[in-house]
Length: 103
Image 1 (cartoon, helix red, strand yellow):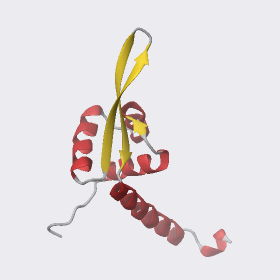
Image 2 (cartoon, rainbow, N blue to C red; image 1 turned 180 degrees about the vertical axis):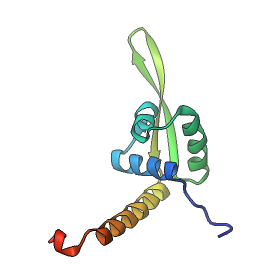
Image 3 (cartoon, rainbow, N blue to C red; image 1 turned 90 degrees about the vertical axis):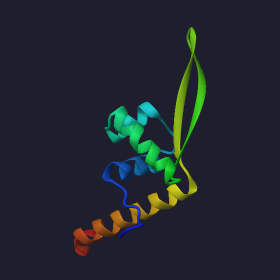
Image 4 (cartoon, rainbow, N blue to C red; image 1 turned 45 degrees about the vertical axis):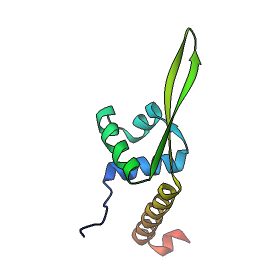
């Protein structure tokens, strides 16, 4: 197991939220995943270091001032990981539901 990366439940929720919603702003992501800004700061750093997440700051004109907004999205590698998580989830779901109920 040494040398293997194991994602936490919070990290998987972040990856899935970004995979299902595409690019998201920080506020939307925090609300979707239901986590605090402090947790996000730690997890964002970890996901960036793993090469799964990228962020981009944008300036937005808002009424009397300019706001700096950060948008986040998965990298190509992040999309691959999200696909793997979804496959595992689907296989677990299909095992729990009797085949007679599906068809």
